[in-house]
Image 1 (cartoon, rainbow, N blue to C red):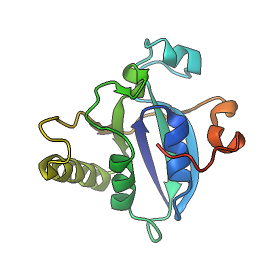
Image 2: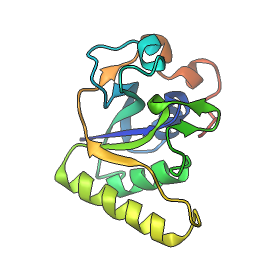
Image 3: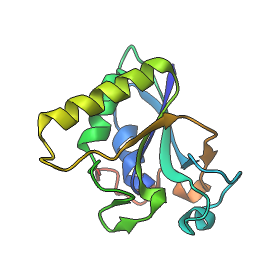
Length: 157
């Protein structure tokens, strides 16, 4: 089993999208990439912690590859929007890939370059950060599988 961590806006929809992929064994929403230890949702939303809302997942690479997870990541948000996704604005909503190994870093960079060269976004540049994974702070329990708990589990990013 391996870990993957992605930030692509509000973590509720991001988690729901990845949770439904065969081979993803577990998901958790939380905060990572910042400087404040043990942040709360209110702290992260204050834009003072440096953390992004993110999804950390455990996946079976024999069932779903990291490359396939990257494809889902790229195709389910707008990686050209700096510090926002749709109506959600702030650094906590940034697009980021938090890699857990040199292989993940290489795969993430290659997939970004391929997507940028594809012309899908025209002249707009992809602003997704590709950075080493750091401490992941699990969000409050009410955020975990938020959409599923509300009967909205067919929603996607």
